[in-house]
Image 1 (cartoon, rainbow, N blue to C red):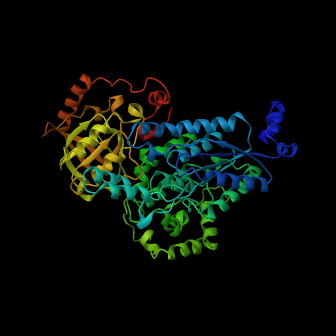
Image 2 (spheres, one colour):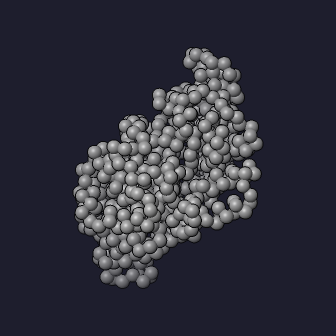
Image 3 (spheres, helix red, strand yellow):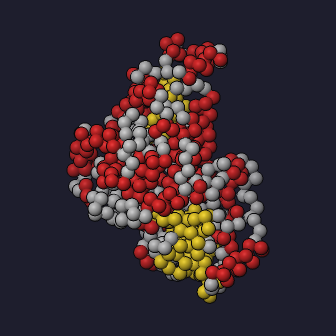
Length: 571
């Protein structure tokens, strides 16, 4: 055991651990770090201590000694609408760094990593790749929908309607009270739900355990089983980098397309791959999405809350539908291949238990999860756009974009912050045919915050949702819908073309052709050669904005973050 080897060279280890109550028997056993994002930070983490305790029970049952460590995450929802959201993406890297420190500064032979949500879960996955000790991931499941199946992503629309005077304060307050009725990830396929699915799709979770109900007896049972299972991984010396390969990431991207997952996965999967020593880039997403089948009808793109995902069979059911597209020979934490896991799930009572839950809703399985040969869409859900506005690429979830906006030429309305943009939308200064640019919001500009309220203000307006576009070097909430193009690279803070756009420029969006480009100046169409001449003149006159962060974490992040198309991690 690694822990035994380091005990020989660090004589203080034993007495310090005994000072916490460890016995000679504890010291002689394999040592397991049980890392979690537990804290009173949000519903996705507030309940995790109960799962940590169950993991510890399982580790002890398997013959190991567990040690609890904590790297509490923040909530993007609580950070919305103020400068707190600037810390969101940076927190992913800081949490990953802290877990790396926890797992390497003290010797451990294996780890169980417990997290649920937007940045905490990707951070744990990044750390698993870095630390590379036998590991398994447990997630905190999903909260139920509120009365009338109301879910949190609908609050953005409710807020925009309240600000426009379309609903009264009491109605808005009622919506706030019913949006989060319990613990777990928010009940839509936002970033939290998407990354739970991605962790299972990568082979790092027990089959069928992503997005289980956050309350009930399933998750505690899974946590205890994970504690026992990590001891088997230690005995077999099966490491995360033995499990997760390039083919594992390709499987995850195919599942991502099938579920219409959050665009934030285009940030997180490349960053996780980087820490596993694997290159996943925009071309990978574009290649795999071209003929992928989109089959899951879950919010925000679809109709149903995310708690219904498990009722329809969860990740195993999605994988069964797209089985012909997957690499079934990849290894998983069960010690079996993906194909063997799917066969085992089919032979168990997993689908029967899920169906029993579904029967209580009155909804048919096919209403939630379409058959492969009857998809919602057969051309994936994510597109990578390029052109003179985004030489390194931009991301759009085309499955959430009204068909009217898949091909359009619009007038540029540039803003240098989200605050200016949303104010213009709510004042009705934005008109049909406008392209709202929000720039200097990339990783090096402001930490790459979400543009959630701006997208909701647009998508909740029936006229604007089908007649304008939002284009940004920032990113979007996993709850976002509508004509939104993000991650534009290079970003404005680095002098990318998005920084050079001026009022009245003509912008072409062509999602089928994967194009985002300027096609006119001051309302007049121009040739590509003429456009390049204008951009060259503007670039010569452009001056970088002063850094917004003179000190602290955001200074560190903004100075070292990579391009959004590489994952936005600190390099």
